Amino acid sequence: MTQALIVIDMQNDFCPGGNLAVPHGDQIVGPINRLIEDFPTVILTQDWHPADHASFADNHEGAEPFSVTQMPYGPQVLWPRHCVIGTPGAAFHRDLNVKRADMVLRKGFRAGIDSYSAFHENDRKTQTGLAGYLRERGITQLSLVGLAHDFCVAWSAIDAASLGFETRVIEDACRAIDMDGSLDAARQAMRQAGVTLA
Ligand code: VGL
Ligand code: ZN
Image (cartoon, rainbow, N blue to C red; front, side, top):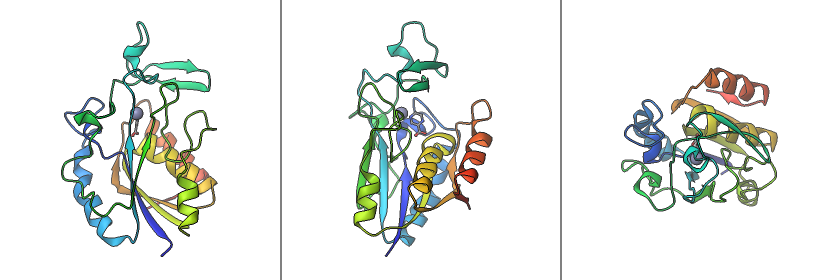
């Protein structure tokens, strides 16, 4: 089988009540669970940050959440503290069917580098190893779902397409943060990268 479903960051902190809640993020748990049954291979990603992570606004004196700062690797949005290693906010949504996952890929665990994409960290150099894993298993077609549509799903999909995977985002099973037009920009960037928006 050459297909995999990649479920991005279906964690409590990205759902209503969480620290970086994506509006209606919990509504896609049911649709994702149905998709999980249809794919031969399922991979879950988990945003997984140490407490001193550089993407947290409260680790930068006087910085407001959702402002943009300059990192050594370029501009970086500063987020509310979220998905701290081992906390309930970093756990998967309780109703997500995690039983069929072949792999759980953690990302963003280096204090100095954020990682939206499941393939490359935000410095665009540090690899997560996912491409190698998929290639070794002979997987060529990817379908992506999850949170957030305009950040981690989009960046993962763009990288997947540029790495040569046939890449599709199932938009009904995604929800967006949508700050300053970020969803429109992300959809345009995905189309440009050759990602199919389904
Ligand atoms: C995400 C912002 C910060 C995401 C993760 O999963 O889209 N967004 N960390
Ligand atoms: Zn994060």
